[in-house]
Length: 99
Image (cartoon, rainbow, N blue to C red; front, side, top):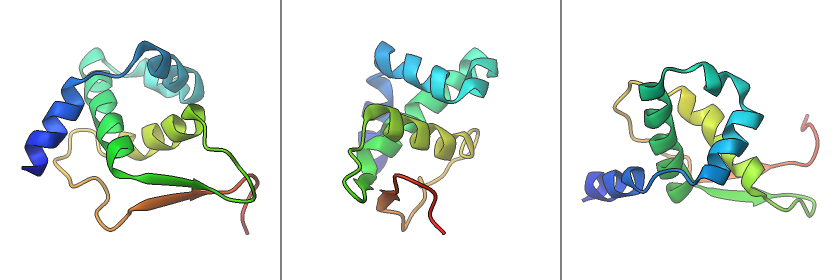
């Protein structure tokens, strides 16, 4: 059931505006072969559908923030059959460095 839902999400395709954000925010994505970019975009969509983003100190979570974090996380999953960071349900984003 979960795999069917994920396959449907991956097939929906990354909107062009989101694709531009990813290419601008994570420049090395442009260097990936086309097949890897397609795989990455599908993984990004699943990651965004399954993870919750929370801003702290009044930080509003924009598409740029969500997509940048998702792309960075999903690049590590390329060519892997995985469960998209099991146990990770929420991503807390701070407006500045957290020490």
